[in-house]
Image (cartoon, rainbow, N blue to C red; front, top):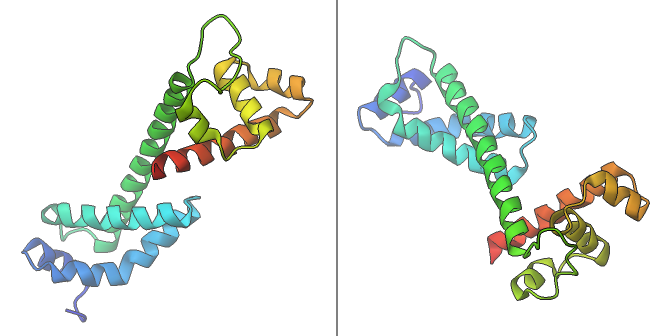
Amino acid sequence: MINKSDQELLLSLAQGNNKALDYLFKRHSNKVYNYALKRKFNTEQAQDLVQIVFMQIYRKRIQYDPHYAALAWIYVITKSELKDYKLRELKNFAEFNESVSQNLGHIPNREYNGFEDNQEVQYYISGLDEKEKQILQDRYLNELEYEEIAQKLNESESNIRQIVSRSLKFLRKKHATK
């Protein structure tokens, strides 16, 4: 097996020799990983992508056409899965933002006085400092725009966006481990 070309390995995989996938993985997993890193994925996301790509190679093994280069076929799968991964991340982020807004108990048409009333919210925000809590409260409970928050706190709008982004990333991580 070790001396077989990528094309021969894919054909062997399509014929039911699952060992061929191990050889393909050894040859190309690092390429997929580095491709993901170059596309601004962090190491965890890149590792996830490698697993997804090789799972898709296995699932689509019968679809491989030997008239095309094996590495090009793997690249097409990688590129497609990278795009899908990013779309899933965006969708999850959007759902999380909506969930945060709903779980924080937004009261329409009046300023919300704080996070104190909700124990679940208290759990999630317990690792944030007071400034981060205030910014999230202003953004998601009081529905202030970034510009308004920046003026209120005498900060730059880009700094407020960064704080919100970091805080939401922290909350997502905490939510995922709960």
